[in-house]
Length: 439
Image (cartoon, rainbow, N blue to C red; front, side):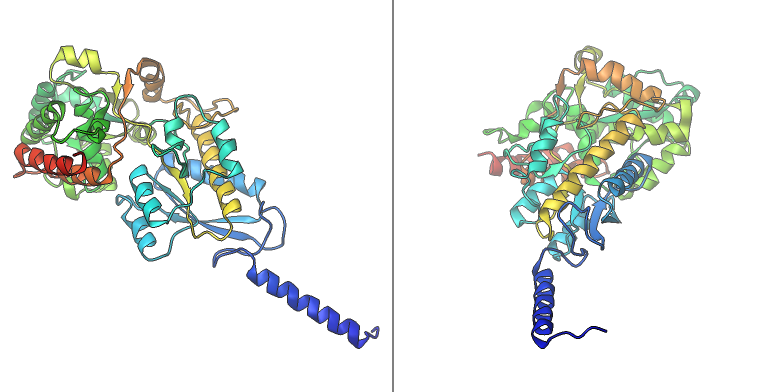
């Protein structure tokens, strides 16, 4: 063994200690190991916790594909999945309240607004990765990336999504219900027939308030194309007539038995199971449900446009879409230890999820341009979306930005699905918050 002079040894020890000190002071949270910002060098992996939807083919497969692609691009980055709970983002809000935010999280505009105020989401405006993502956007979906306040909080992977009514063609034929159902009165009569035959007319997972709010907006769009965006306007201190009409329609349908008595205590798994096992004749959800419903019901399932007060209004407004380009997607926690890397990963996951949805699911509703060919057999219901809805859409509803108004709206649309809650109560509660917020 070679001799080492004392001075050389001292210098070596000093350099080693300094290296360790610098490493300890460098970026990296409790779930990360030291590496370069591009994730492609260094010996140890960087772990990033990601909170994302992962409960069916439409949510799990795009995410899994994106993670596998990430391994090729950034082999030193390891994704630790925390599957999102369908609870109206309550679990995520608990993380924020307890200081336990994941590095990357999937959420909606209402939650992003709350997190922006509480400094739980990283502002993405000035990152190079954000500029690159913006250049790849499909035309018309800018509102999915750029918030009404002009800032960017999350990378979307879908385009403008919307809610539709699914129905079981076999059950409708058995009961003798003609389609399309064009009016609210026709839907009420169909509900009575279905209930008499022992079916739940429409299954809804109204334990999650957003879906009852989406249901109500479907009827609102037949009277007011901009939907809930109308409630954001200055001077709207009372519920507009179009909203009152839709509220009366929702009450009529509730009294006709459209909803299961336990609707507001029913989660997604329970509601979808009722539909897929043939116990419910209809189901309400976004167009993303097409893939699961096609898999479970095959050619027995189809979707319909939202009914209106009369057939003339139906024909005139059927292409007013019950969906809005609100911001959402993969956001980054302000507490992540390596913002540059985490932002790059969030952007990558969003783009690859979009790539999977387009190329392997055949969905045209994606955020960014995809340079791969569609390899999937496009489900007939999605083909209808591509052929009928997208080229003919006259309007998309405008997102509701006022969180206070939205919270009251969520609570009260949910209450409209149960006995004992009147249209008058709904109007009174909404007028109260509108007078306070829009004065």
